[in-house]
Length: 342
Ligand code: PLP
Ligand code: COI
Image (cartoon, rainbow, N blue to C red; front, side, top):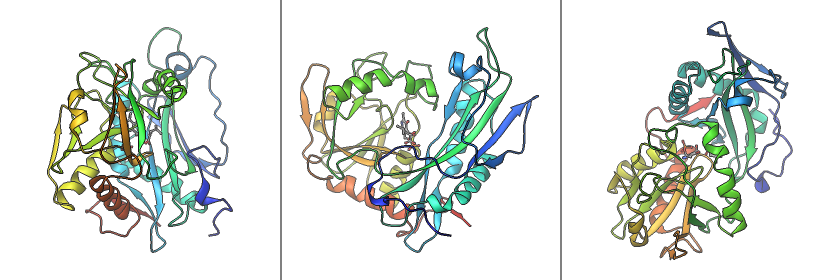
């Protein structure tokens, strides 16, 4: 298989059309078998549930070329399970996680030529998504749905390499108590567009959302969870039922405990504690583990972490190196984490 002729080392985090995508339709109460297609266009009713009432959810994962030339993906079963949760909350039909994993592997295989080579810094981003495709005009769930998986080769989500990003506390809220913050609903991202555009205009890379009920606790950014390191080297991650349960964060906690012998705490993190941490990062499929250089509070006070401005702090770096080592086949993975595409 010949790789596509792309400048792999200089890809941004953008959409590039690849050869195949997976499509399955739900009608009369069941999913069809689904198939790979070269057609990148979606044709749906002008009154489709997704267009009127944003009935949509999605997932994100990556495929990697390992050091020894295999193509693998990382814990797609967890994404499949999370998408089931998203579907239930949005009254959409579950696409069973076993079939989800099968479809993901098939779509990667079909786009093998687009999986960036080992060492290029790029990966193949995989975006499964589902939407209400049939008409609704009264506020209710659609009857018909489409599940698709597209792939696109991507470079880093944040430019600037190992340099930390600058974050500000958002004056807007991301997720209401008992709302949809814990699932990957498209609507959570639509509402974050205004705050992220404003943050960029004001010179910040990302927003830190606080809990919307009390504005006391750290939640997450628009597209990644937080990870903090105390001065004595303990990993602290915010616990909240209004943040997305990040696969990357859950994996990093395991790596910290079982590979690096670090202490971890998943607990509510008050915003006023942030200034006391030695290192901070954001983590996610797109973000991987990106260091945070500073956080600016609502009152304009800027907290700069001792590490992060020019390079990753030592603990965040160890987490990054171990996680990416596992993903790229340099370090043995825990049982069941790596799915090889054959
Ligand atoms: N939080 C939000 C809001 C996200 O969109 C993402 C990305 O998927 C994450 C966290 C990180 O989750 P994961 O590590 O599963 O990609
Ligand atoms: C991911 O990390 O997969 C996401 O969906 C986050 C998004 C900001 C690209």
